[in-house]
Length: 303
Image (tube, rainbow, N blue to C red; front, side, top):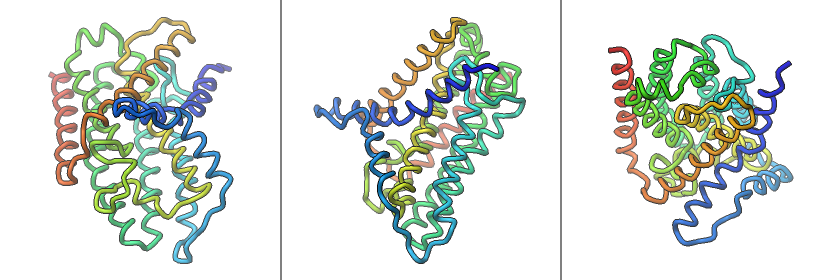
């Protein structure tokens, strides 16, 4: 039995909440502040787990099941995610389609839980979430299709490890376009600036945050932890694409991957420090731009 994928899974479960801490600390440093501790999300999760939950009489079991199913879905996606150049815990031909479906299920149950409250406010956020995701998913899938075409594989655990320095030398422009498209998708799917602001509470601009306003206590902790895991999962794909380095030694490859994840978190913090949140009418244009980049990459690969 190969224990390395299990170790990688445990590392992801433990370190995922650290990514938002690095992002927020980077933003604070750029702004000249000390900022919250790197471990702040760990403290928040522990505090929320010790609290009770309050449920509206208008909600049903859908509202209570949403956070739990969402966390289970992102855990399913994590099991299919390669750890740098090492294979995932589960790997089979076509698992990239299941990966996309797991993330789609997470979004679906979050939207259902928001609609179950009967609040027009949360319904507005759910509508925005579904609309923007409909524009983001095609760009993500086109990027996967392009990589599958380059590597000749249809499994995440064989596609991403097959992206080497030689691959970048032969199809570098196309891979760079895919990486740029995936970066935009990562920011959009994880409610980051310039698409969404995870710290805002202005009702006219919120997207993801407005959908979880009625959750509290352990339910909110599941949502926050699931969001951190989703950031880790999508970041892992981007880092694996951008680090075509493989030493063949597990601990060295792991250090390269973890270093890439740290750089990615710092990079997101710098992006959020340098940019303002886009107007809602501009977000579709940004996502369509990501789709155009992915489509152009696929055309360059198939020419």
